[in-house]
Length: 166
Image (cartoon, rainbow, N blue to C red; front, side, top):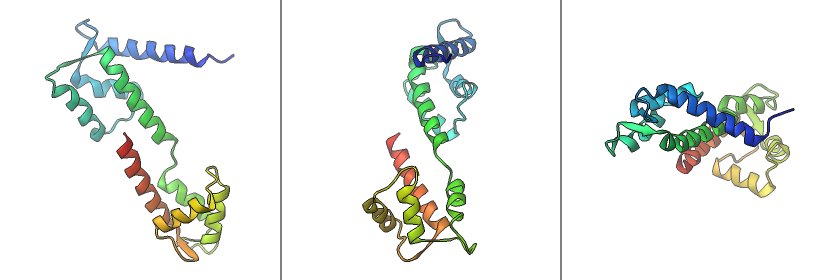
C-alpha cells in the first residue's frame, strides 16, 4: 500500500525540519544565511549560483544573519517546484534526438509535413493553428526545416518564458 499524498508531505516536512535542525548550531530554530545553499543542496536540489544570489540577497539586504525555519520552508518549496519542473522538461539534445528519427537522409533536416504530424499527434497534440504560429515564430517556413535550429529556437524562447515567470 502506498502512503497518501498528505502523509508524504508530512514525511517531507519532517525530513526538512530534521535537516534544518542539524544546521541549527544555536538551537534557536534558525540557521546562518550562509548555510542556506548548503542545506538546499543537502535536500537534493542542485541549485545554481545564479539562483542562490537573489535568495541570499533577500535576507542580507535586511541585515539578517540567520533564517528561521518558517522563512526557509516557502523558499525551499518554491525552489523545489522550479527544479522539479526543469527536471521534467526534456533537454534540447533529447528533442533533437527525437526529431532526428525523422531525418531519413542524415542531414539534420525534417520536412514541415513530418514535423507538423509529430507536433499534432505528440504528447501536447498541438492544433493546426498552434503549429502554424510555432512555425512563424521560429521562422521555420519552407518544406525543409533544420532540426537543431528549430529546437534551439523553441528552447531559448521557453527558457525566457520560464525565467520571467519565476
